[in-house]
Image 1 (cartoon, rainbow, N blue to C red):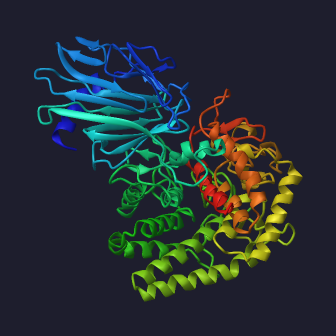
Image 2: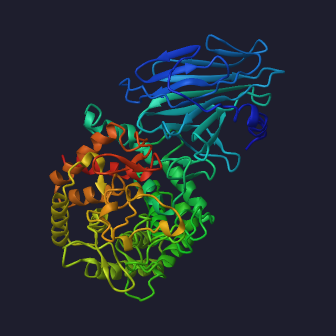
Image 3: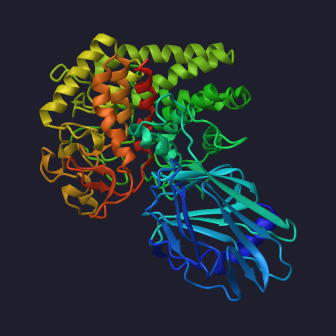
Length: 613
């Protein structure tokens, strides 16, 4: 952080940055107001803040949500003259706007302590995020950057200046705050231009088709930058998760530049740089808010896939060469978990029925309330994909020994995958094989999809598996695809679901799916126990497109797109629970408010339009 930014933040840490009363602002009342089809704005006459702020990047006038937290505490001597803020008679901030742009300007006024211009969002009303390259300390965002409001729109920020960026979900209400730093004696004029834009893959036929409005508004939803750690995370005030990084890289490969000289791939790279430097996340032993002594089986594959995706899409062979040894080490560490030598990576948790997960001993992958353990089918699908990518990378870098090692590991894993996991009783791939040799098969939708997506199953077997999966879906009566997909179609038994009550956390099965009954039926449809979500639905849909079953795929995808267009995968319902997980009637059963994994499925739109050709 430069001296000007540091001194400004220090001066206003109490009087400016933390003076907000946290009153929720739903109206747009202010001393100055503006509305177009793209923007709806209001200015406070008490302090340089927006009393109203809404954006619709599609220009359809969808501007009813005002997620601002208003400041009701006046700054002594401040006056709003039209759209110009004055202190001691001198202009310190001016605001101009037109149909799709607004501009903030600050000029240095000698003898005046100019406050930052504040933009603070109630995160419960919108999970806003700022996307760009941050300074190594002080939570300072450089320009250009992008302000993205999920389900609302995107504003590209250019000009001369810096933004102090903070987010906190522990405060009530949770907030995301931007402090546009003012002019100073060192920099006598600063200017911030915010322009409403849409940033998504430019695909033919979607601009005038309302079916894809959610795709166009929400493509960036998966990218949420956590300012404290300067890393991509579950959302801007939530956790960094090692097992999710590859999802960001999957979409980054297809994302146009955010601004001149700034891409989402830059954010993937800087996030990976933090992991490569030794930062540990949720999912890694010793990591952020992770009390389990083991690293999940999908964490290292996720990081490897993300790195290879970044290299393949950016062409950054300099970065690849500088980090190749660490990437190979991640891959070798991943396969070192294969203790019995059969080719499958393993998790230290047994996965045995009755050896239930605990809050301080989580399961082996992203599904952290389900007893995935020992030899995990989902994590091994990722490991196979990671190994094939590392083999390709090593060939590209002419590292013959590493290329051979990872190619051989991938081949060995693939050879045993279907024989290990295919359940002859159901015709489906089980979720995991526990240490006692038992298969745990709960008709996991994402397991079938991931295995087919990554090429672990031949087409004939894959079609039989998908026939069985769709038949099971019809049998259990799941038809409302606007909610997404359940992760499992059969209730998770009590012995295979997280045990919260043993450590004193008592909640009904309808809260987070933890069952009282042995068969798990009382917790079914709630949270990870069969709750509907967009998370990992991509795999099922992509697998169907890959097999040429485009009508089956669209029967799931198109209702989901309608749900995205309505903003139904984030926010909270009347129960106070969030919509990132829902029961089959649509009731909220999540807690994040926005969980980025829901938006990985938007990749399937690329398959959808490709299948039209």
